[in-house]
Image (cartoon, rainbow, N blue to C red; front, side, top):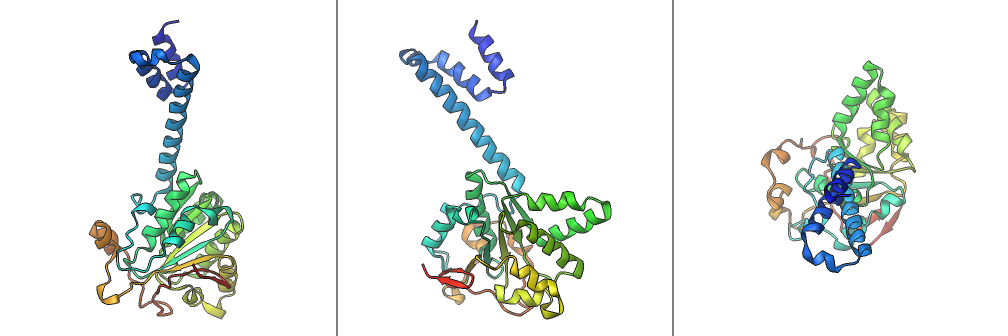
Length: 287
């Protein structure tokens, strides 16, 4: 059997990385000094690494991140915002995912809540969790269209199945009655089975009003399904007079931040503030 025939068969079996590595081995005189077992092990390692890298790329592509360049290691602790290194390190381990806990990240427009969420979930991709990013307005529009086209269950599964779901612009606008029903249905199906990250401009205390308060029974039902055993991160500048937007810190395209709708004057009127602690709902944990 010729070397070319071997490489052709590897390609036919979709072992392209192994095929390329085998060709390189044939052209490297130093490889002749290694045993057959060592050469084979190297080929398998190269193919394995290639497949894992391709899998990671697919997960990131499917997730449709708003900021796919966000990484935990790139978070700037000198940006002027209170950022707890231990807190961030803990969340980057994805422990909250294995525990099926949710994460609330709140902060004013440009504070970096979406960037932080994307950074955490990219770490989840590295552990090969399935993830999905979506703005709440887009999610609700998908449900509305699906209902009219008779594909509601299919679209619901699209957002139920990912192990981690990022809901950006959470409750930026007050949802309608039908939209609240869609939110309730989605969060009920994800409860205790997966993790959801909520990116909001309001602290969680203001969500009840956005959901309709006591006039809407679903308000209590929705919050009951997400607040228990959820971690909360509130972001605020150390010195408001010297506050920098996430665009300035990371050199992002101006349109990314400008397209965000400012919600500081909507709903409850509560603008998100930061405390340097990680808070577990109903139990405060100071780090």
